[in-house]
Length: 150
Image 1: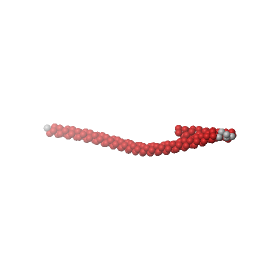
Image 2: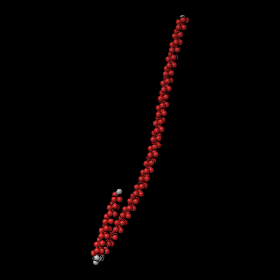
Image 3: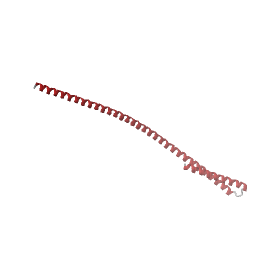
Image 4: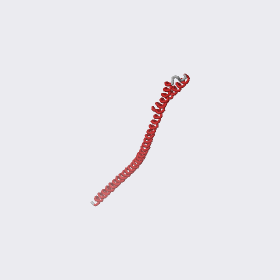
């Protein structure tokens, strides 16, 4: 019985040793897998952190671009207001010049009507001046319309 018991004990011990070795292998394999998973997770976390940094940089850059564009938009609005003011001033000058030309032309017409006894040569000269004034008035009107359309 002792021999049988020793044999059973030895088999039992061998079996226990075998199971412990298998268990140790499984633990070792699980530790290796866990280490690999940690390494992958750390690598992924590093990539995600890098992507976050890139996105933060792009967000900062887009804010800077937005501020730049808002500044340029403000400058354009100021320039447009100045241009509108200058355009109005130019238009007023054209209107004043047209009114002056009309008064001069009317005055010359009045002079011609009052002095029908003016010599023909002087009348022709006055009519030529009136014609030039009318041409000048038409040119100023054309320029004014062109400026206004722009």
